[in-house]
Image (cartoon, rainbow, N blue to C red; front, side, top):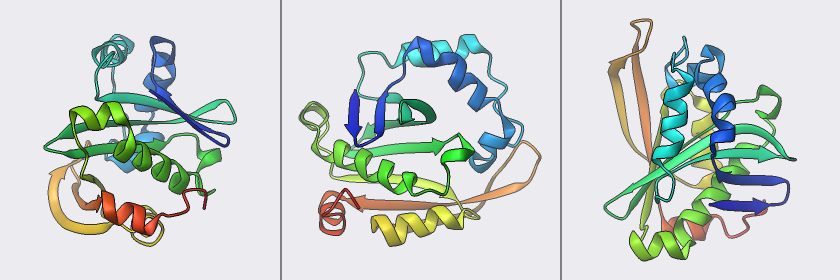
Length: 186
């Protein structure tokens, strides 16, 4: 899969991306917001297998590029007419610059409209979550994307350091998305 909009590219990860993904996933600073403050500790071989396991499938692991530079990753899967994505801008130089909102809008438009995906899994809604303390992300989801908070799960698991962690789950339907995001360029 490959989506291009302005200076942003979202594309399927390849074996050539394994080292970069592995560096990000093993970096505690990058993975802290996903509740892995020590990183994943994943061997490069496992990252390569993760990429290979998605080749030719609807469920994808992708690289986010801005101005031709890999700056983050995203993935998505499907169940019961629902898409379940996740994303992370890993390069701190590209955080807090409005790219997250643009990337989410590009991804959601793709998931709701791609003919191949929707011929196999008609996507009616998208569901994702974020850490409860990630107020910046919640602002984007609620105010800029127009998503609904559907659940808060408090103290639902322990992170690598033994701290109890909580998350917020969001949802947006196809109709809600297109009603609230009529100008994908904004």
